[in-house]
Image (tube, rainbow, N blue to C red):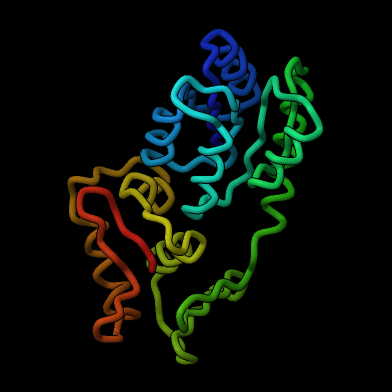
Length: 221
């Protein structure tokens, strides 16, 4: 599991990272809003630990931005703002949990485990968008009611887009999810798979399903 820690205090951030790494998590560390945005563009994370008092902005604004862009993974706010009003606001904006400072590392780890368990069991098994119906359990796809024959890799690629409708997905993120590694994005392999997916699904003139964002990646619109 990959966790992103967004914390402006360098020593605390390193302490949290070390504690998570010792429990077999892959951990990214960001000290500002800008670094956090870049981290999410570069790779996928299964959960985020978010401080609110960041040097270049408010963590709540960052959280709101993520939710509006389609990022649905669990976010735990870790903040010195500990009034009831602060917690309610954070949860209303889109946080999944709120842990005030000072805190116990063991409790933080337990809450992250709980969030990841809840998130994994809450995932939908049938995804639908603009005539596409993807059944994760049956491993089947239909488009406008007609079955679509996809390879396992094409199915995995479509699943990523269906779980992130409207979100621009960087090429590196797609490669990590499909090939389980940061694939060489200079090759045209991803483009080949996108071309195949478009040929099977993108058949309505003037209303493309997939948008190429030049220099970044792709988007299901």
